[in-house]
Image (cartoon, rainbow, N blue to C red; front, side):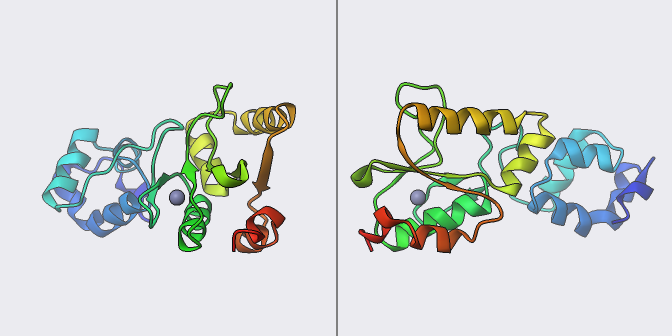
Length: 178
Ligand SMILES: [Zn+2]
């Protein structure tokens, strides 16, 4: 990436980085980060994206960011959650996404009411969002697990190193629905 060479670039010189900027934006970089990378102001990047008719999406700040839309229309934060959502949808398993765990202030990833079961994906791309926003994800993950255990909730935890499909297919509760 030639972005670091772009220091001092003026608006008109952004042309040569056009494809690069579009690519980065589509890959989740926000306008603030792009502005910093190309040493221009944020409105310059915004105007440029508008002129290129690139569809604007919500900024990625904070833990409420929504990056992906699953086949059932659910908004999720990571490709892992996307796989889980699409798996549940394709297997006609009714589920809810990203609502409060009852009696807590925490948000779950997926919940299957008929099983009274939660699915949590602790994905790498989610980790990156937290890292970018300087949020201590590890602490919040530990807290979440402690709360699930404390409330004796039925939950399936999926880690980045896991084979997501395998994990879902090997779950005894989920197997009963397939
Ligand atoms: Zn879904």
